[in-house]
Amino acid sequence: GGNNVNFVQDVLRQPSFQRGDTPTNFIDMHYPDGFDGVILTKEELEEVSVIGALLGEQRRHVLDYPPLTLVGEEMKKNCQEKDGKEEKVVVVCLGGMFGKAYEVSIGKDLKTMAVKSLSPFSSKEEENEGKEEDMEKKTSKVTVDQLSFHPNDTIAEVMVNGVNRAVQVGVEDNTGLFAIKMYGAKVDILVMSPAEYELSKYMNEPAVVDTCNLLLSPMPGTLISYAVKEGDHVVEGQELCI
Image 1 (cartoon, rainbow, N blue to C red):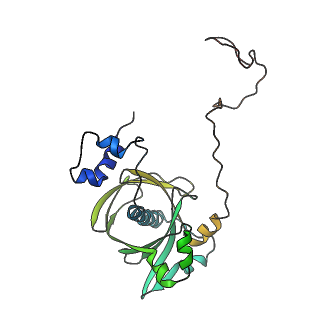
Image 2: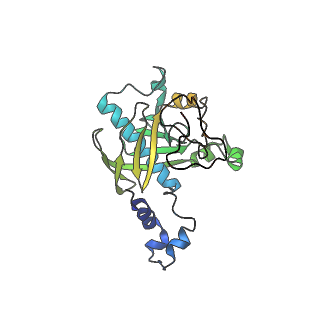
Image 3: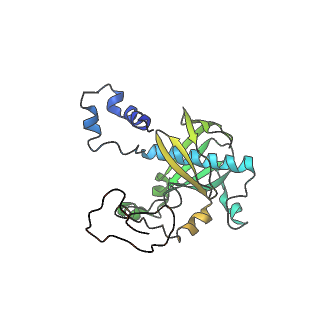
């Protein structure tokens, strides 16, 4: 059966609830159209991206996965020298290959991470594209002081931006996709190299087919004959088709 854990967690995140401003119509005020899942803030999405990148790297380190790259030399390009510290750059896609992408720079000390959204620029941002000072504003810093996780674990304990978090971690599938649950939201994570991310842009996103008006069969079969026509009234037990 279902539960209301995600809804309760979202209520606890509401600033008005934290202030104690909870009139009897609190739910009607904040959820006039019902609860449709937790919507993460910009800062929370950045934290999820960094944690997803670290969990992905930890999986590869422990399980001795091959490096995330399509070309051997590409991994060398992913390691950059900035301020004398070697960093590894990965792209984290929230929601899978066609989800929201973030570039995460992982330092050797695994402490301060740089994260930048790779989403298309807005018209205002396009005016400033190419200006270094404006591009720097798009990069945020996320501090990770502690990470405790093994690929066999279902819970990762992490201190991010000075706050201890417990993150639920799902099983990774054969495409490299795994899910984490944080702040009451479940997010699919796919970690790629920058080269893989660039190539993924040439992939067509699968079309979503509306099947609400279709009668779907769980098994393939051949329709030999049918005994009714459109508009007929049918009763329980009546033969419809073979």
